[in-house]
Amino acid sequence: MPVSPNTARLKLLLKNNTMTKMTVTTLTASATSTTGIQTHVNSSGAYVKGLNTVVKNVAWAESMSGSIQSGAIYIPKNGIIKDISVVVTSALSSSVAGTLGVIAGTSTTNLTTPAGGEIIAGDADSLMTSATTLARGKGTSTVSHLTTAYGGAAALVLKADGQTYDSAGELHVWVTGSGGNTAPFATGSVSFITAFWYMGDTV
Image 1 (spheres, one colour):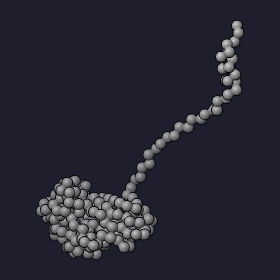
Image 2 (cartoon, helix red, strand yellow; image 1 turned 90 degrees about the vertical axis):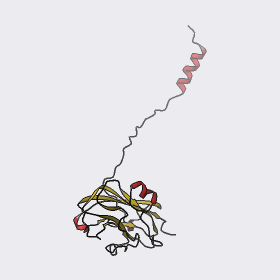
Image 3 (cartoon, rainbow, N blue to C red; image 1 turned 120 degrees about the vertical axis):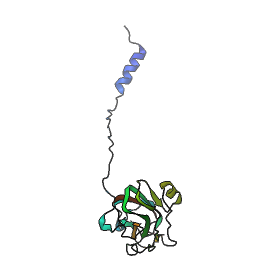
Image 4 (cartoon, rainbow, N blue to C red; image 1 turned 45 degrees about the horizontal axis):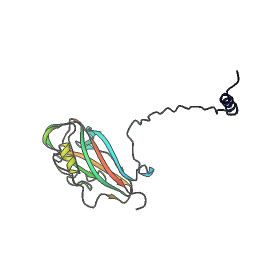
């Protein structure tokens, strides 16, 4: 039987053309998780140019002399505080009825003095009016609508002209009782939430 011209041409094409071997590589993606508290260190430059947020969760301890203290929150040179919030993460309780307020400064030096904070002067009852307990989720903020949302007693107020850091420094935020820093807590913890703008090394 004669070979069809089309079949002959097809055989010729297949003979003269080779297929390059292809290797398929399968990529497997895996999630990387980080465990623990991430600490900003001023000298490391570990900040995003723009908005940064630091959250510190702190449980009351007897060594804090009745206040709940954030510890140092590091702010880099050319940082400017945007807002500060305090939210209860585990219900607070006290052996005596009293109020709870918030005070903040660049060190702990003036935080033992009512209204002595350089960042937030301090008040007696922005977090809680007179009671012995405060439920998880309650809080206060320098942002008034967040204070409303968190069920806070009053909004926090940042002091005028004191929020820009001309050199690297610290922010300390405390929750204090109406009896000063000696008012006792029995149990409880809060989150200290600080947002600040980092404007870069040169501004």
